[in-house]
Image (tube, rainbow, N blue to C red; front, side, top):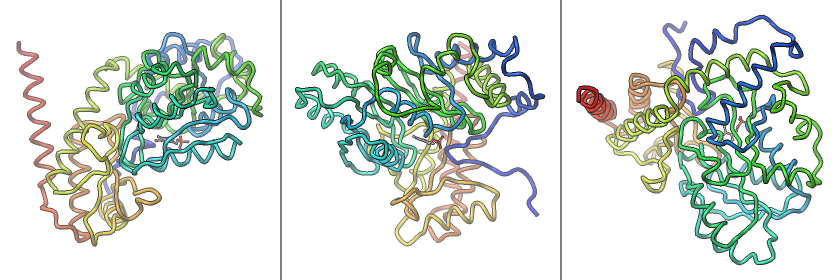
Length: 398
Ligand SMILES: *Cc1c(COP(=O)(O)O)cnc(C)c1O
């Protein structure tokens, strides 16, 4: 018998705010009816603000982030095209695997799990590619497996510095709407996200923003695609209607979630994530533990991956948190299994929730055999959050 609420601190799906859940509790409706197009048009217009783009086209696919990856690739590239990407965590690894499965010639740069996208190595290879064999560069903006955020703007500069024409693909599944993302400023051609992370909705939508350059590429691209065809989904941008049956409840939830983001203000949402994340990181530092991110400048504001000490199994930490304290922490993925656990801190979140995550994690760490002082992580985060609160009150008083 479990009492009280369950705590969800995985980096997706994230906590769905109560008003978003209520907004989804509506009767089924006619997705071809006269009113429905307004909902679709409003969603794509407001998602453009989240991607910070004026010129791109936003497409919502029933599916998840991975489906939107597939749509991005199959609509714009040709069989055998060379693409350049780095592997530095489980998500970038899966993306490279998909590109290979779909028949691309994948040039992979393997870097440490904990490093960011290797911009200078990208720059070197792009500069050496005089014939323009590389058709696309893929960047995982926020590697959710390691808690590392990469510099997408720097990759754009690397492309521009050698006048390279490759398309810039960005996986923003765990960053869009919670870490600064600038589609137009960074010249991103295909930006992918999903409904269940920063956008605070259940899983079920793969969301793609497509630049004019990528739309142009889609007119001649010869990869096979059917369901995901950009042309079929063009009606969404033009009329707000979907070519096939959309998940209508989820769209109402997304409407409510976007309203919340705009009411808070996107910049404030991003600042809140930075502030909450810093508290979590201070907590981890107070435990005397390391994060997977190789350098503080790479640390993600949406997820922190924490290395457990030698002799402790991170799977025990996660199991204890779940079984004894009704709390879900993120697991260490693939080669980090047993070596790390993750705290997801994105979406609908506040200081008290982060303190709960730290409090439960430190109990679970101690019970799993780690030499961590109870209360140390919580105290460090409290110190940071209380200071931030004081600073806010000072600003308000001035
Ligand atoms: C969650 C995630 C994905 C996978 O998205 P799905 O919605 O599960 O298909 C891809 N990339 C990153 C960086 C993610 O965090």
